[in-house]
Length: 364
Ligand SMILES: Cc1cc2nc3c(=O)[nH]c(=O)nc-3n(C[C@H](O)[C@H](O)[C@H](O)COP(=O)(O)O)c2cc1C
Image 1 (cartoon, helix red, strand yellow):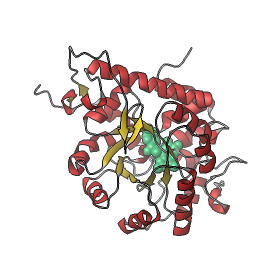
Image 2 (cartoon, rainbow, N blue to C red):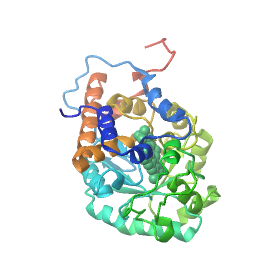
Image 3 (cartoon, protein in one colour):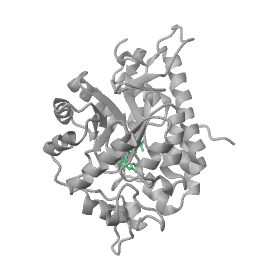
Image 4 (spheres, protein in one colour):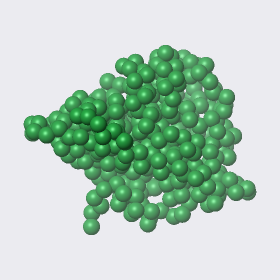
């Protein structure tokens, strides 16, 4: 039986992956409260669809940072795709390009950025972790730029690595023959620890900088002419500061519930942040987006686009590049249908008046 939604992909992937890989992909930090709340938050909003609108000619196409995309949905950076499939990030790049949208490649990719970019048929943005040694950071930016990546997405919600208890329990490490392919030497290995700690957490706490400030972001701006986005913003004051610095986009994210547990559900931060920054920066959001109606809600709240993380890994696990193509096709069909049912022939027609927020049983 073909799988018909993202939840079925998740269930199927869970049957395929071993405990350590599944634990790494699926879990959140500590009590996994942010992980659950991210998902639940989308379900608390109700839609108020327009009726009797001609939706015969409609399109899901839109743009993000001047880049045309087939739908308001791009692919979040997730680490280590070879845990899901031997082709790893190359398979992902092929499927995402075919779907007409953007892949954000993780610093912690298991295929080097040059190989991923060479296989890509669509735009690749590079997700950057800032290393203690600024030369390592600069080297990553140069490689990503020379490979053809068209934006840098700096992840700012991980000064230290929070504990995902499944990874501690499973002594998570990378299997023989796999490495963090954008890095060299010890930085590229994720070895099992003697203590009940995850090998990844140990690696990252050792090499990633925990002393980054807004000055560090200014330093990174000097290293590149590419547009920069900050990923992991939840506060309006931080969003405004990013805008003042000339950052082009911000991603409202709590790292899929994998960093600070009990951090606010991302859906709840869209409206305040969009109101605070206005048109100065483009706002994206990720965390728990699994249905076309979630996408409509995000856009109606003011986001330019959503991003999805885990569902891509489930597609890759189940059927490699074709699995991701199918996951993205399912999402596209759901967005298209939800737009039609909401009376929105274009993404620009998706406005706040479609939303009935929790406890608001008043007007319209
Ligand atoms: C297995 C896994 C690995 C991830 N690796 C990274 C990473 O390397 N860099 C990063 O900025 N975010 C990383 N993230 C966070 C995602 O970019 C994204 O914020 C999150 O997955 C979105 O939530 P969703 O999975 O519910 O869609 C990772 C998430 C998962 C699940």
